[in-house]
Image (cartoon, rainbow over all chains, first blue to last red; front, side):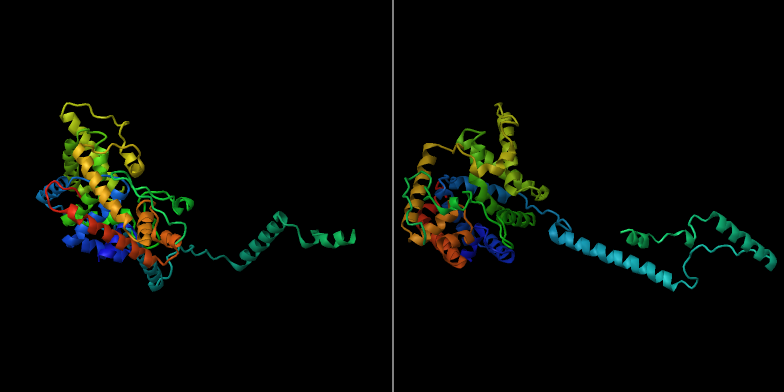
Length: 161
Length: 239
């Protein structure tokens, strides 16, 4: 475990290994001493003077006298939380869309689209007269020219060469 | 082993002088920065793990953070509060305040940035309570805590006794480093002085990463063994 502790300090452990090393260090007095010694060695190599042992002991004693902190856990924190939230949102969306689809299919009256009011019936002669009038109107007012109007452009362009 | 056949013995009490290492050639900044590789737990993530454990009631996790940051915090505070004994008192108060405030720490910033901010505020309040002038905000911006490792010219807590103890510890460490086999000495120097990752050290030393891991560990163990008499339980002994 001490080698894992050494690697942990250097940021060279994977997540689960690191968690194991941290757990070990928190629960083992000997590993805590190693943690102290390894940090001291690094500091000394970089020319940074150590702290007084008595001062460290005093801080530890003061912390031990404090009421134990128990912070409420934050739900959905971090990447795992965001992934879980996204997954839940996706499932909810699919469920809602599926439910709406099922409702439409299950409805005996079919889709609830507004139906046009039934047209009033007219005598057959009146209807034919209206159709003819409408046809004339369309012919007079149509925006598109008839087929004779079109010139064979491609043919004349080829012939002009 | 390439280009690394020399380690300069260091004077006691002075910083360990690293050989001109390939770290600079690699463009790697010196210091203790970690190099996050996919899946590796970074320094900040390790702190976060410790904080979360402390938030769940594990005081020992917070003690590990105290061990890790006490010296750095005291060096920072010594820029505001000049008296070494007062620095220790303010540091203790800052750690206790940080422990009490743990439920409010959400990990938006690094733990040490948060801790240093508490430390600076504690020091300012301490000076005000003493009727002394506290530095202004512009004189002391906690943001500089981010680059604190590299800050040059910081005042150490220099009582004669402190200096003597620092020198003794420094001499023991440096003697122990000098006595190491070359491959162990090189590995730990590249790590602690040049801040190279294991992968980079493996390339420099032309060996597998597992070998680097083992060499650094063995080097630390050997030095720790030499330090053991000085890490006794006498009240005023230093770490």
